[in-house]
Length: 192
Image 1: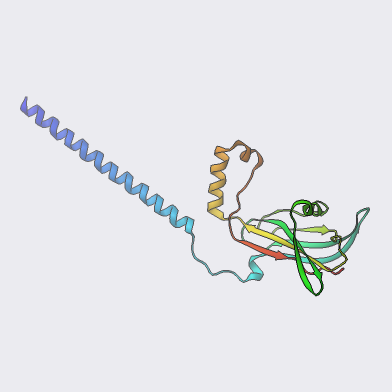
Image 2: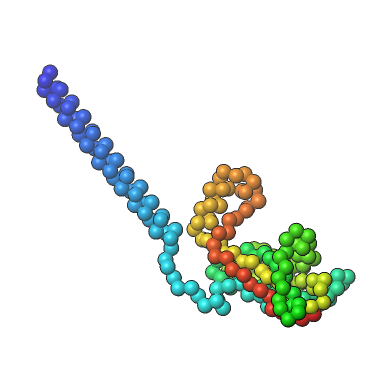
């Protein structure tokens, strides 16, 4: 009987050693995956591209009449970045008394944006659009201030996936998170 107990003891020690070895291997693999994800999320440090290549661009094309709405300034807007971006109208600047005065487009002032024709908020890399803006009520030169934000490639995609799994409304509307670089683009001066 003592011989039988010795065999059992050896088997149980072997099982414990095998379980411990498996635990160490699994923990090592998990640690390697976590380190790999952290390095992947950080990305490679790269030198920024010249500003002419990395930002959204807006140009004044000219003026047109849109019956029965009247005279509109015509702009082109292009995403010159390597990432999707969202663009929102943030303010209008008027040239008053020899200086530019900025007025935020908040509250009632946002109604002016509803009169714009063809303006989009979402742009994939290289995409663009032509949009038309009626002049503000003033009879002075003006500019539009546009707020741009890039989509952070890995971080935002992960957040979207997690949110779409947990939030049925996000999945139904295909909402996306944009938490990348922010910058401002100002249209060229539109003469009165």
